[in-house]
Image 1 (tube, rainbow, N blue to C red):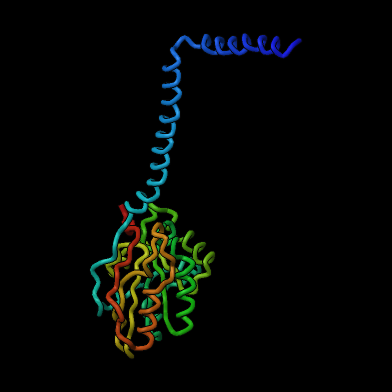
Image 2: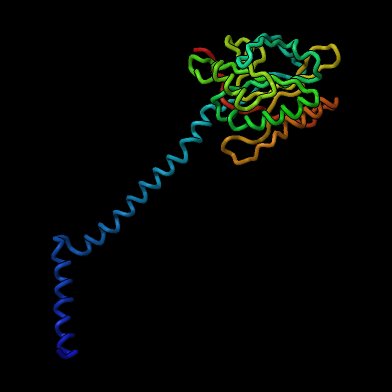
Length: 252
């Protein structure tokens, strides 16, 4: 067979293939092309919308719980309390800390994302300063009717897991939270005392500027600075920023 003959034989094959493709659809070619153009665009738009919804969801959950600490002034006297420590069964009172020059009271809980964000650093910071004379105590006042994961058994597990060097207490009646005028978790109160005088509020504010979704590193800068000042007899070096977290879950 000559090259010319082979080439001539190839031409009908090419035309036949094009004809079969055209015949396979009853729609005009411009309609087929338009449909092919529309389908990926719609799929991409739907995927993008779904991705935006996924990205927004966690942020909305955190924002819905956001509460700021308010309403307590420097000089406020630490209220008396008597609360159980679920890990050991011991009852703790304010008088147990009378021998310390400063007392850190923290309202926390197990489930709050703002507390979870700081737990390891709270444990490290308090352990460091307790060796320098600071006393510290954590209190959970959340209702276990609505949030059973914040109950005594879970408090004991949490204290053991994170090796808290401070007692983690349970405020079942929520009267202690009300006496301190606490509204959120976490919420930090630093009290100091002068000799035999009662504990008076030195600082009420945040741990630092870090939040679960703002990508700011956890440093404990604000709280560590004021503890240093309280233990060394210096004045408060800056205007406190309120603590930000989930609202305390009051009994229904």
